Image (cartoon, rainbow, N blue to C red; front, side):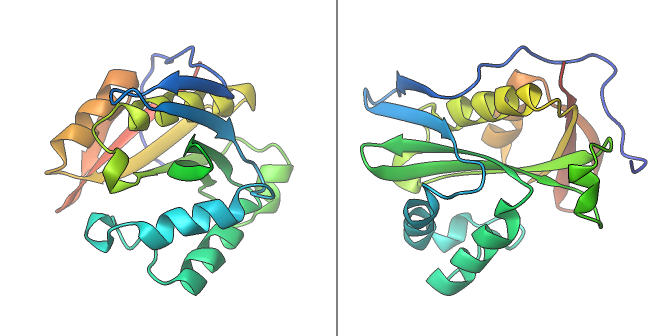
Length: 186
């Protein structure tokens, strides 16, 4: 592990997918784990093609269907993924990517850190879907014995920082434009 700081207190428990719940707009949203992306790759690519590029963070999601597909295929092998669906459409995606140089560390069960990213289609933002996605991703991660999760968020993104703090993330460091946060799952 790196020298990254994690809270002493463990957070949780978190709900595990799958589930279906109403968002604040009264839409039925299904939250489902999609490890490997076999059943949701095309729908997730479609979501990211529709994603407003001005909402990108730190270069992700990439733009253009080919780059999006390549990115999802690259991260899918060892990542932990949860998607939100409204009807047949993926409207949100949350992912934990192992922070390792050697992918075999994931298979070996080494204690590793996982970086979190979460995206919700603009038409579905501010309806509680991000909170549902995040909680179920952390529940799915706990089921897989993942303990150390971290993220960076733009320091001026107060709604995202508030969401992360509500579920147990703590601020652990800052760089010029980014706030680093971490959580220890229980």
